[in-house]
Length: 115
Image 1 (tube, rainbow, N blue to C red):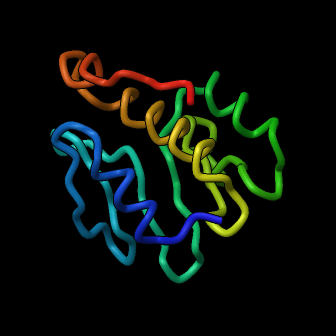
Image 2: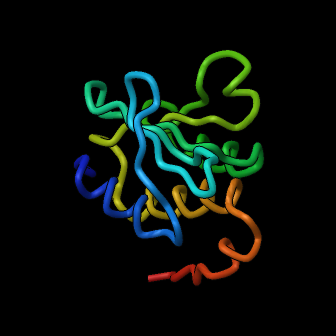
């Protein structure tokens, strides 16, 4: 339910977020730290979440949001299926992922809306 362009627009809306290649993926970074990657081929994104946030988002639907296999998943890396996720939920998760890696002064600039 979220297309690639919409995902990119949201990811790049955060302070100092940039889009850079990362192997065969596209990464979204702040201060050289990755908070999200995009696989256009699989229509899936990986977000770097805290373990608590990963647990909360994964409880929604394991077919839509699920941990990355192996060690990365145990550190909070979580897949989101773009064709199955609602825009507002993805935006909330992206905000959390950005705040995990962003310096406090940048993360503090975000004002989370509850629309």
